[in-house]
Length: 250
Image (cartoon, rainbow, N blue to C red; front, top):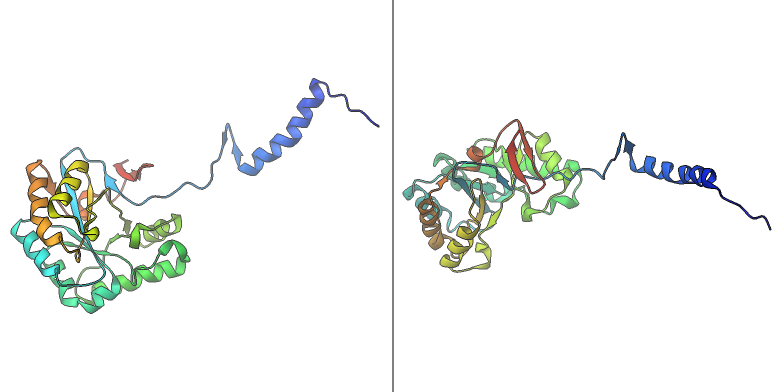
């Protein structure tokens, strides 16, 4: 039997034969090993010094409360953002037009509300573009804001949105209105998490949202905040998005 006697030199040679190919496979450059593909994030909130926040409403099913919400927003002199699903926009074109004419952002929430992270790029593109067309056909401007259904996204969803010259938007405060909390519970939940640059998620069809909305607006204003549409709170260029999804001026 042959016995190998390894001295220091032979050990170094052996190590180089094993370690260097492994490092090369990982993507070694300079003094750094490149990590897996960087995760791309939507905008969850915005780095703001001023006390400014945005209210947003997702509209996918039902339309009984939309006009009531618009009336409340008008009474409170607040502009917000509505993310519309394509089949909703096609079914309720007058509401789409009313939202736009009232000065609110009209955003894109996909055409049929699927889990986009399970789709290929061409289908993601179709989901966004088909919704854009239906919103435009209803008389609103082409959206520049996109919110993935279910908050479900991956790098491809974010990249595809950006390729269409649109901003991918999430939220950092969820009212959970779809779970039917009381209006006061919604107020307290939002108040606890409120920060400059926050984006608040609500829905146009949640049971207690019309009753809660005036209280939420009054609370936000009493805390010294101004409420603006998302298109006015985000940076359109020269920005970065940190690992927490906060958009910052570059």
